[in-house]
Amino acid sequence: MLAGTFLLILVGLGLIWYGLMVALLAFKSSPSFVNEISGYRTAYNYFAGLEPSDITARVRLIAGLAGLAAFILFAFLAWKQLPRPYLARSDLLLGDNERGMLIVEPRAVERAAEAAAREQPAVSDSAGRYQVDGIAVSVHVRRGTDPAGTLRDVQSRVLATFKRHDLPPVPVSVTLTGFDRRHRRELK
Image (cartoon, rainbow, N blue to C red; front, side, top):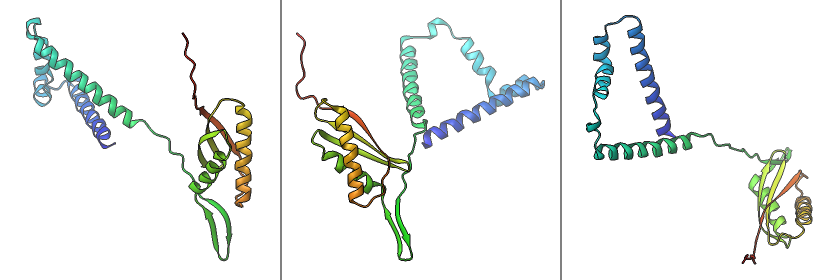
């Protein structure tokens, strides 16, 4: 995100600038010269001279709202800067000869697996993700009875569909993601 990068550059430049001011003071540069170009002593004197009577209810309210706004902004920017994994999918190459190449798009393989999974009567929803080392199918079932048998049946249906469509057999992993509850019991 551009705003996060800009903020990072701004903070970095501020750290470099005041690092230079500290270095100038360390090398016995004139404190009045360093104060002229940075204003560090003027800001320090202002904050050191504040009295409890200077902090009114209005100042507290403004400082609190500004702190809350800064927290929300920085939390949002930090959230946006977190790296997100990107799982690249590749095409499935079925053949390559003098006439050309036969390529199947990843989404077509996923759709075939999803349709095969939905043929199982207990499955209410399915989602497939084709990867280089196989296909992962997530299923949502109508009822929670015999989930292991349902998952084995979905796996065999997906493999049969691949065979029927002349797709190469790939490892199929089936994951149960949930089940529908039609009748919930209430405790009294």
